[in-house]
Amino acid sequence: MIQGKSEIKKIQAKAGEAFKIRIWEDRTKGGCRFVPTFDAGVLRLLSDEYDRTRNIRVTDSGMRSFEFVAMSPGKTTIELESRYGWKFSAESHLSYEVDIIE
Image 1 (cartoon, rainbow, N blue to C red):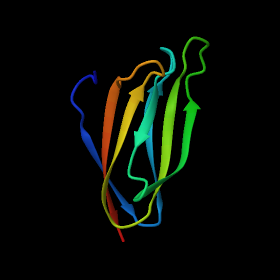
Image 2 (image 1 turned 120 degrees about the vertical axis):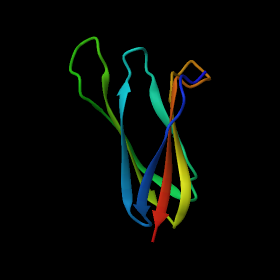
Image 3 (image 1 turned 45 degrees about the vertical axis):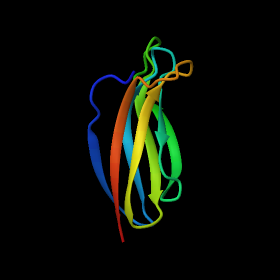
């Protein structure tokens, strides 16, 4: 079950231009990672990178960045769910409403 209530964040992007979403990710508890869901007809995922920022032997946490390019004007949504590989349900959920302008 997803914990807590999800807040919708707003992003404005230009058609044909790239934009990034950066979020904190803690993989310490066994590989919990954010997985994006989006309309591939409107957005294209250019990169999905993880940068470990804590350099401690027992901790694996850092910044995750997703870079998208908006293909055409309109509105769409990006859903990010934090999942463990062995669970079917998400631990947390982030929603982004993307307004793509010309």
